[in-house]
Length: 216
Image (spheres, rainbow, N blue to C red):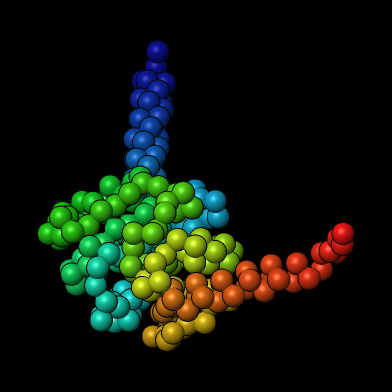
């Protein structure tokens, strides 16, 4: 075998080695980053988009007179839950992506609020929210009408709901804070539960009126 041939084979082996190392590095990088940049699989796709500092501040501002339990639906990396726990809430996060839940638990431990926070790997559509007095949601328009029905049927009348980025389609907000993408809308459960009940009553009455009555 000539010296030139040997050098060419060495260069080929080196090229394969470098390709393997680079490919492995990219695969490891993707494996680590994918859980943070891909949507968590839900009934309706709810992508992970971290809350801005202004959004977190606005949520805490509109809940400053509140206390008790709080849940963040689709809690992502846990920043809302952790910030709420630092303000005295018993805060929980519901998130389908296990990587984000584990990361949130680590952050809560690092921030010293692990005793007042809980993070659950769960689909928000399969969880009852009857125990919570404050709900925070960073939703998408496609899910908000269905979520209205779920929250109205499960929450106590004393609850408050804070919607971030997108408002609920039929509920009338009690007040708002922030502007643009950082806007948050606050809803009172007593109001939207009352409206839902009146709507159901009107619908039932209309159906009854349209149904032919039999006479003996």
